[in-house]
Picture 1 (tube, one colour):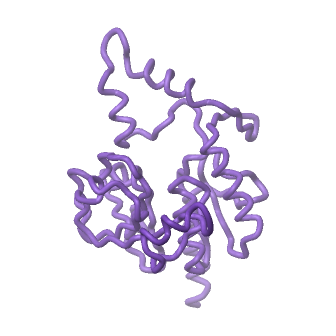
Picture 2 (cartoon, rainbow, N blue to C red):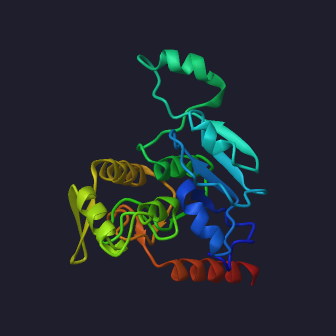
Length: 234
């Protein structure tokens, strides 16, 4: 991802929680999306200048105050009662984004609405095995603040995973876990991709089900893009 981040034919759209570990790794996405309605310390201490934030219109103001780049707002409320009053209050000029209830699904919905040549999913949060949150994210670091000799980090992570594993996802002989919100998002994405004319590639683990997406590693996908560009030049 770092190698291709300056390419104009690639557009990186990151989820809010993923921004911090991406910047630490030297990857600055062009866009970030957030729909967090409660205060979350996703952006403090980060250089967000030059990054465009796509924000749900009801995102927590305390989160947005820490953003230093441009901000555009969108809605994802359902049309009709009982949401009519909310539409009138928020304003109808924002438009509506279809969603599967998590920030990843909203990002996918926005990207597909822009008619991309292809969509590539990297590290989506539809399931987990031994970690509930990726290392380096705010939520992961917050859970470790209470660690100590009698309650080490590994115990905290194990407890978090145990509380969150409501369902099982079986993939290629391995068992992963997910909760009701992530599972609903997974079904929503797979239903969308099944009807979608654009090619969707997923290198996430466990990611979406085979048959709904093309399963491919990140390096292989990027190498294929370069090969196609090379043939086009010749």
